[in-house]
Amino acid sequence: MGVPSPLRLAAHGVRAVAAGSAAALAATAALAEAVAALPRLADSLERLARAAASLESLSDAVPSLDRLGEVAGELGRLADAAEALPHVAGDLERLAAVAPALEELAETIGELRELPRVVPALEELGSAVGPLHHTVEELSPLAGTIAQMQGAIEQLNATVSPLQGTAERLGRFVDRLPQSRRSPRNTR
Image (cartoon, rainbow, N blue to C red; front, side, top):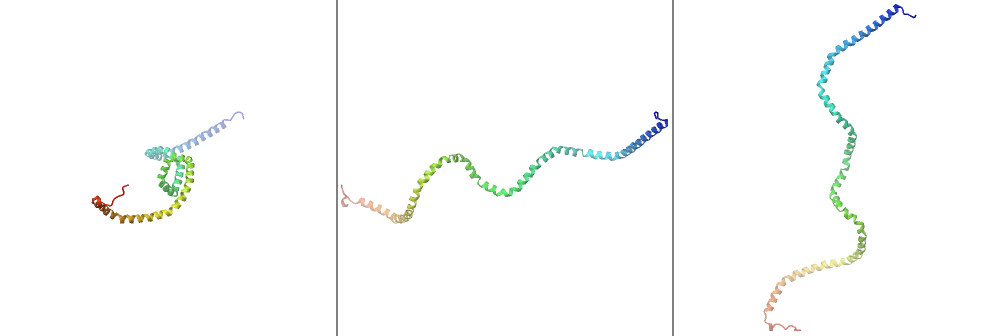
């Protein structure tokens, strides 16, 4: 068994050739299929060539699509906020209505900071106003009396006003009278 017999070598050679032939046959069949597919492949390549511009624009859109993916979460939050808008619309309208007052308040913030210093003076003023309140209560009946007197004064004025012109004319007439006829005045 040391040396192989020539028959064995020949059989082994035939097997190798047969295996090579089978491989060659398989390669030939694959080549025939590839040749048959060439027209379809050419057609597909032509369609791809026509779509090259579209493919390029798609490749240009990749960064935009990436950015869209990044902001997808933000878009969800924006949608949630949009759903909440009808609920806060009334609050926003009320806030818009008080906007001028808020602007005035912002302008007076410095004065408001002085308020703690003014509070003691206001408390003293409040204690001084207490007696004034009682005085006002005592004077309120007088206000009604004064209102009645004002009506009487207006009526008296309406009565006396026409007499003013007559009194002035009478005074001028008396001034024309000779001095001797007048009653003597006190000469003290």
